[in-house]
Image (cartoon, rainbow, N blue to C red; front, side, top):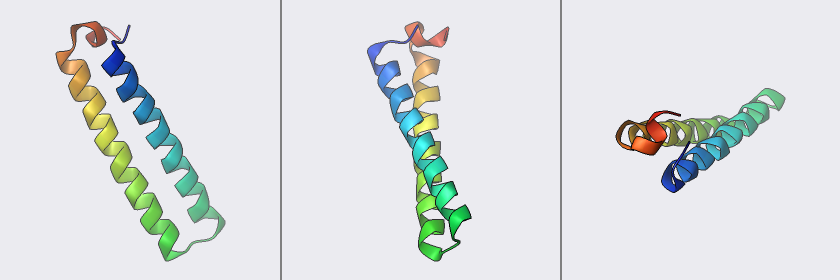
Amino acid sequence: MLCASGFEFEKKLRLASLEQENAQRAIQSGSSRSNSKRFDAAARRYNERLSDFTSHKRVCTLCRGS
């Protein structure tokens, strides 16, 4: 079970994951420098969101069991 904040963190993490997947597909379809930068930015955002979510789960009693 997730609290409201945990749900928001999880939602942002899913969106960042989708953004990273889309950037990866763009790289595979045509390797350009801008696509590579887009992927790097998406990967960085995903890692930040993952860190936020795991930090939240560590301190939140409702989210800890999920």
